[in-house]
Amino acid sequence: MKQIPYKIYLTENEIPTAWYNVRAEMKNDIAPMLHPQTLKPITFDDLEPIFCRELAKQELNNTDKYIEIPEEVRNFYKMYRPSPLVRAYCLEKALGTPAHIYYKYEGGNTSGSHKLNSAIAQAYYAKEQGLSSLTTETGAGQWGTALSMACGYFGLDLKVFMVKCSAEQKPFRRGVMETYGASVTPSPSMETEAGRRINEMYPGNTGSLGTAISEAVEVATKTENCRYALGSVMSQVMLHQTIIGLESIKAFEKIDEYPDIVIGCAGGGSNLGGLMAPFMSDRINGRHNPYFIAVEPASCPSLTRGKFGYDFCDTGHVTPLAKMYSLGNGYIPSSSHAGGLRYHGMSAILSQLYHDGFLDEARSVKQTEVFDAAVQFARVEGILPAPESAHAIRVAIDEAEKCKETGEEKVILFGLTGTGYFDMYAYMAHNRGEMKDYVPSDEELEQGFATMPNIE
Image 1 (tube, rainbow, N blue to C red):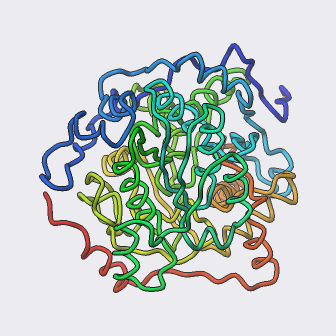
Image 2: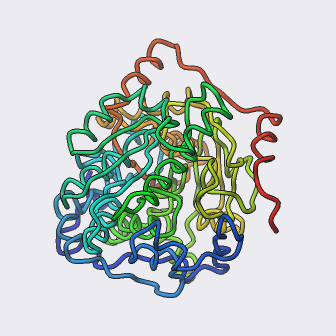
Image 3: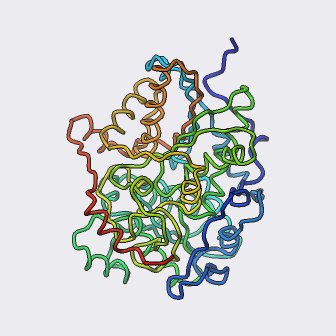
């Protein structure tokens, strides 16, 4: 039997030269975003005051299957890419499963996550346009860290609105962002009209990504020579993150294997979309038929319990509306430790693929179950995973256990989006038995749904 190495590496010359645009091949394209005031389909002229010109073009592009990666972005990628595809031999042994478990490891950079793949692209386009600053939001802090690195590299100023509960849980993330030159404000704040309004409507709230987005967009549109950068949800971000899946396919070709199951954590959708999209192309074109699983927190179950329809992408109603699975823009999730998965909606691309049956399954998992899997993985594989990543680990272990029961030698791939070394308060709470699960009631979800506009 051929021995597959623990780590399958590509060379620098094998880094993909173009991102893959799954919208060009989808059976049904996503519904157009709508202008928040007119409710008419968004145009380039509507997006350009918010996003960089090139990013606005990418956001609306549903025809070009591949979009070239600029040389300067590819050169930056070479600092930490290609990332390894890892065979989890030790986890397989611990589980006693016949399954072949692989993970694509995206934590090998200072930001500790996959977010840098899009951050460097967005900062590059801002610099090329001659902008001087960017604004953004961040949940758990990975995106804010990544964008602060990218802006530091290109000499851009950055203003970050960090979800308040995450800022309190992860102060060292804030320290890293500030080290790279970013200004960080817990959200909701009293610095913006949106923040003041949300604080008045929901006094004492712990914040949400939807709230932080409102504040960041407001500052971007009111600041000269500034634009807004988003770390998930949008089509442009899904595009940049396909570097993950494209590298994964090349790595599997080297060992003559192919995944039967592809698993990713799902908050806004950037990690799952980036890992899954190139494999989705194989399914769409009849080359392979992998089974796709999205894993989300039980406390913020947009796919498993949300509604598919138009909703604002932010709590303050300043951004366009997208047709997506949503819990309602007014839904404020509990302060779970997987801060990067606390968004009320899901990427329009992933939502459409799920609605059409190409994204096969969504599962919600409880926080304590997630950290059980994280600890199990850390003890045998030697990497302390981010809480977001541990959602995918949880379901990968569950699927491997099924293979143990049936004797099937399935190939399982999951995305290890990043490391959890800034999440030690969460791990300590889990280790002490102090971590609690939260599952919203139907009544609580209905309150969120009530904030969704009635648009067909």
